[in-house]
Length: 422
Ligand code: FAD
Image 1 (tube, rainbow, N blue to C red):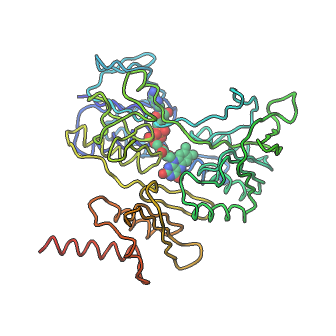
Image 2 (cartoon, rainbow, N blue to C red; image 1 turned 90 degrees about the vertical axis):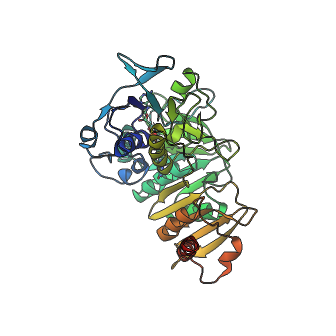
Image 3 (cartoon, helix red, strand yellow; image 1 turned 180 degrees about the horizontal axis):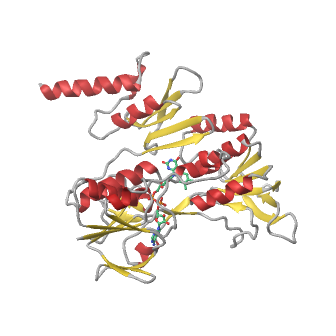
């Protein structure tokens, strides 16, 4: 038996690792189209840009891990197509046979398109790969002013680092508030206020409509960005963080079901029983009507673990609690659960002003998500108590003035244990 994994990011590497740890001892081939050993992406918009002279990627596993686990990691090995009938993947100069195929192709950064074209300006940056971060880091050395396009996590993480380096930052975002897709209004206001206090300027309800070089004779110099509200910004560089799209190229060409993600069932199997999909590129059809697709380390890593069990014959449904974190300057924001169904929230204060958690409840008064600011203990407790097998926390239970998530979680698990003993 041979398991071929396409993509050696967080999800693909975890799948290979978990297969080996579970005792699978046949061939595992891990194919990556990148030239570097697998590395972590989160630092690319955070610590890595803070100002070290020589950047190095943070590896996903040690150098010896792949050889010692007998995992055949092949770099610069792009899969070009899948022959499902004969169970083969085609690379530029090689064909590999699989018993099971795992697609872990991740997502692709959305590029800025204005009037149907990518602007012809050299100093536009994106953040997806280590090479992107190296290029940006070099440009930051001579940068005084930067424009961030998009008010999401990556753009704001960059803004926090840039301001710390003495750079003037303007964030241009089409929404009425930044971080509106991922954080509640209360938490995003807190984060934006913090950024403003550091000196970052926000142009809300603005879109960038044109980007041109200041000096028309060269595309390498400073740039001029004009917004939909006719604000003109001159800057040394622009960072674009307008989201990512699942990489569906291989799956679509192979005729697998796709719908803003490679569609998989609860065991992470695609419409072909010999092919699985995990991580950023997969949409899991579960209890939610349209299924769920997440772009996070937790999702990639938990699906990597789960797919190994599915390949080895388990039929268990994937239902890990989703969680995510972002670092905004000195602050860590963590989110556990899904906020889609939330209709009301309660705030629990921490020991000081820059530490609190927001508990979000649905229309049935059941806790569905927790956002925590600098409150790792609340976040960890939330991840436990949001598990489907746990008794749900109700809105009324938070009324107790001494309520803490950790305390409630402990009490709930000990009373469940007591019931189990009886
Ligand atoms: P990827 O890591 O994208 O890996 C997919 C790999 O497959 C890539 O190497 C790709 O080149 C390769 N590939 C694609 N097609 C082929 C092919 N045909 N043949 C061979 N190889 C192929 N998440 C958090 O939870 N917290 C954070 O703070 C956070 N910060 C982030 C900051 C940045 C700058 C970025 C870019 C992401 C961040 N994320 C964060 C998201 C998180 O890193 C991703 O969700 C996660 O890495 C997804 O893992 P993956 O394995 O699904 O995809």
